[in-house]
View 1 (cartoon, protein in one colour):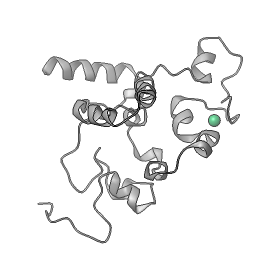
View 2 (tube, rainbow, N blue to C red):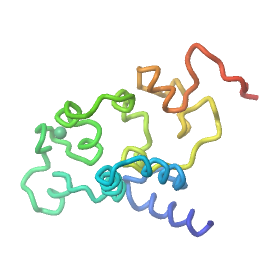
View 3 (cartoon, rainbow, N blue to C red):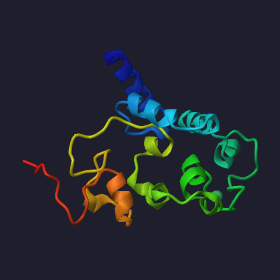
Amino acid sequence: MLAKKKRVKKTAEEREGYEGLKEVDCLGLQAAIAKRSPEEVNIIRYSASLATGTSEKLHELGLTESNVCLLCGQKESSTTHMQWQCEVVKAKRKKTYITQIDPRDMPVHLLHGMPGSLEKDIHTTYWGKNRAEIHTEDEYARVRMGLPQNNRQWVFKKP
Ligand SMILES: [Zn+2]
């Protein structure tokens, strides 16, 4: 188990797409994948591998003349842009509470489909952000991120 944690830590240090990842929530990831179609599982695996071929990466490799997003024309075409910020992709995305979450509120590794271990504090998001740090305005999305409801206190009080 210790070796596994060290591998995750080393990978998080080396790959900016896993920044902040301390431990992978393997059971959570398996449970999430179990409910998905084979095509969706492939998309999650591809995203979590950080191997997405964005214009930015292709430009870094000298394979394209520009790093502009081919869908919307914006200068930034990182994986985060492609998956969370591109207006063309957003317009095609099915509306769920996830589309209401501001990507600035999520850790980078989770944006790419790699869940980390859960935080223990029930007053924060599952990844440890306080309500005051959150940009997401939709209350249902906030609750789905792990925050207690605004107008209701949890039964357990923080010591
Ligand atoms: Zn775009």
